[in-house]
Image (cartoon, rainbow, N blue to C red; front, side, top):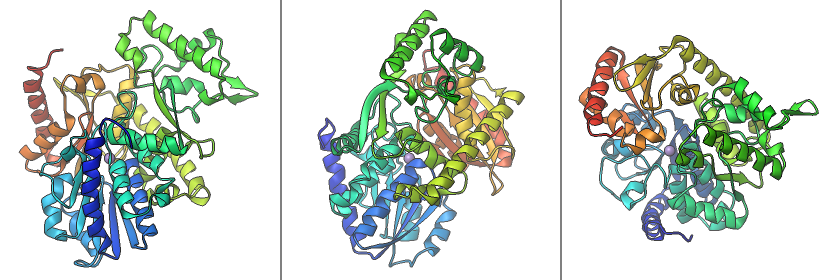
Length: 478
Ligand SMILES: [Mn+2]
């Protein structure tokens, strides 16, 4: 791996070797992982390495790690004998995990840590890598997996690390960096990933051209994003056909010249409405094609991530896990229908929020979905709202939904403009939770974070958050 982060990666690799040695002295490993794309990809990479080195493993996928869940997890194995790997969470529960699992655990995570570095704790922030853009749980798992088994066994697994990174939107600067980039280069060298400079819009292989543009949220294209009618006119006016032989065209059906023509037309349009150049630049960036995958949602690394997210968030993480381990038959077929259903639920959730309208505090928008939207989808839908053109991009969105356990799930989303001005939702969620007395249940990333609060604390939470943002905004230039 050659890149400017060589030193950090070498140190991480050394640390991973210590962990691999610990793991090797156990016969049975239990992988506990987050149920999103990054978590599922992490689990599959680790599972492959363990399988290959002759270990028995099982995997448990969970929505969120709470202190209360640790006892249940412990029961899934043989305490003192089995080894537990926590992937894509655990950073805010290190002390509790230590209490429950003694020395028989590893945490592989990229969320902002509260505790310093230790032997059982592999978190990229401790090694000078930014866990929101330079390393994810899947890329860290890949490094650990390399210490667990021979490189040949992992030949097809580097792309999964990239899928994990894209699932966590780590390409937000237009390309992957740090450890992600090092693994990307390795996959490119082996020929399993092709990197191209292209439109960064979502759905190159799966969305009709109109939706490809209508759903653009990064950048948001005023007048086109969220507006099917205008987008259709725009495409027709620029000489694009929408269907060929009765079938909707998707971006990848276009010829090279047509693709260039579309990019140029979009750029000219964005300049004509005086969009700042830095926003226009976000339109084009690296896209990652998995060369060995069939045409469909697995062909594009970002869409692969969505497929895994759809499985996880709709109670079928094991289907995503099997796909990561190579299934392209039974489980893959199931995943395709889950994906279709997932998209439908997201559309319905978005319509509900738009119909009812958001409530507005001084410094953020909020929406309480109650039990009408699944708590696992509320965050994604909140993020999609930025494309609706009905809300200002100057404020974060906080969405609430009821969880099955009687608590309320809080999901916070922001835009890049806001995080560039210094907004850090992860820290905000954490400090609000702490002040309300739920110390370990809030956190995440600058741009997307969450918390879990009791129902009767909802108003208090809203007030506290507004107060905190008020103080913070006094220091931020708008
Ligand atoms: Mn992650």
